[in-house]
Length: 534
Ligand code: C2E
Ligand code: MG
Ligand code: MG
Image 1: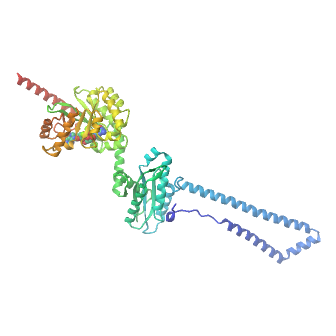
Image 2 (image 1 turned 90 degrees about the horizontal axis):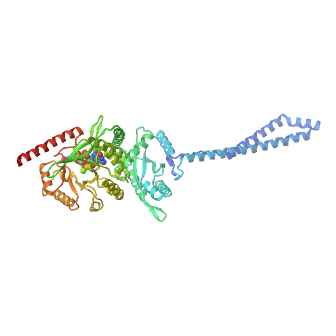
Image 3 (image 1 turned 135 degrees about the vertical axis):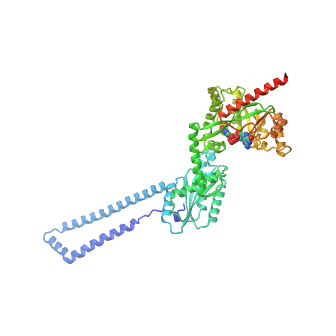
C-alpha cells in the first residue's frame, strides 16, 4: 500500500539498545561504589574484620549471592522487555487490522478518514489535494452471477490497478462494498486529475481474468478538491459522493467534478422522495380522468386515469416529475394500487359502458402478484374487470418478455384488456406485437399533435393504423388537439381518439360534470335524429 505523504506508520522502540545501556549503567554504578569503597578503605576494613573473626567464607558467600541476585535481575529485565515487545507488536497488528481492509490490504474507511482529517488540519498554506471517490459499475451482477469469490477477485484486481495508477504521495482506500477512494496531491493541475480519472476508468474497465473466462466491471468517479478554504473531511467526502452520484445518473463510466449546484439538486430530490413517500400514504396522489372517444362517432367510451400529486405547498405536480422517482425507489406499486382503488371507486356510479384505462410501469410487470392485486381491488370496489384496460409501454417488454407475457395473459384471462401505450417511441418491434396478444395500440401523441396531411409523420400514422387493422388490433390516437387531425384520423380508420380537443385530464368533480354534459349532448342528438326521422 502506498502511504507516502498521507501515510501513517508505527514508531518501534529499539529496546536492545536500551537493555545494553541499562546494563552498562548498572556496571558503572557498581564501579563507582567500588572506587568510593576503595578510597574510603571500606574494603580493607571489611577484609581485616573478616580475617580477624574468621568470616572470610561468609564474605565470599554474600558476594556470590549478590552476583546471583544481579544475574537474576538482568534476566528478569530481559524477560520483561521481551513481553513488552510482544505486546507492542500485537497492538501494532491490531491497529493495522482495524485500519486496513482485510481483502485488498488497502486502507479502510477509518484510516482514510483519519488521514484526510490530519491532512486537512496540517496542510501548509497553498497546499491542495483531491478526493476521488471511485464506485464500481456492474459489480452486483458479477457477484450474483459468478459468486462471491469472483467478486473478491474483482475487488483485489481493482485495488492493485488503483495502487499502481495513483501518484507516489497518494493514499488509496476501500471504503466498503465496491466503493474505493483516493487522496491525491493536487498542484492546481486540473488536467492531471482528469488524466488520472480517465486512466482509472480505462484500467478498471479492462477485463479481469477469472477461471476460464473474464469478468468485466466499470467505474464512475466523483472528484472533490480541498482548495484554499477550510473544509471538513465529511464535507469533502460528501462532495465527492455527490459528484459520483451525478456521474452515475448521467450514464456511468464517467468522472464528474463536484459543483455546488449538484448538492442543491440532490437535496431537492431527496426532499421530493421523502415527500412522495408521505404523499402516497396520505393519499395525496389523485386520479385525473381524460376522456377517450370512439371515432368517427365521437361517443365517450371511457377515461384514461392519469396520476396527479396534490402537493400541500407546491400545488399540482405532473406525473413526469414524480413517476420516475416512484419507479426508481420502488414506491410505484403502492402508488399504483392507491390510485387504482381511488379511480375505481370514483367511477363506480358512472354509466357501466364506460371504461377506465390505467398506466403501469415496466417493473410492475415483473411482479407475479400484480394480476391478483389488481383483481382484488376491482372486487373490493365493485368494478368489473372487463371495464378495465391496462396500458403498458414497450420498455416493459424489453426487460423480461416472459414475465410480461405471463402477467398480461393472466390479466386478459380475467377479462382485463391490454393496450400498448406510446407506440412508436420505444423499441417496439413486430416481434412483440406478434408474441403478445394486445387489444389496442395507442399511437404516441408526438405523431399526432400538429399532424400535417401528406407529411412523413402522417404517412407513419397511417401505416400504424393499417398495421393495427391487419393484426386485428384497435388503435387510439393520443394528443388530438384540432378538428383537422380528428377528421384525418377518422378517415384513416383510427378507432379511438384522446386529446385536448375532447378534454384535458380532469379531477373527479369535473369528470362528473363532463359526463352530465356528454349525456345531455347525446340525448339532444338522439332527439334531433328522431325528429329528423319523423
Ligand atoms: P401517457 O399514458 O401517454 O398519457 C398521456 C399524456 O398525454 C398525459 O400526460 C396527457 O395529459 C397528455 N395529453 C393528453 N392529451 C394531450 C394533447 O392533446 N396534447 C398534449 N400535448 N398532451 C396531451 P400526463 O398526464 O402528464 O402523463 C404523462 C405520462 O405519465 C403518461 O403518459 C404516463 O406514461 C405517465 N403516467 C401518468 N400517470 C401514471 C400512473 O398512474 N402510472 C404510471 N406508471 N405512469 C403514469
Ligand atoms: Mg397512457
Ligand atoms: Mg401515451
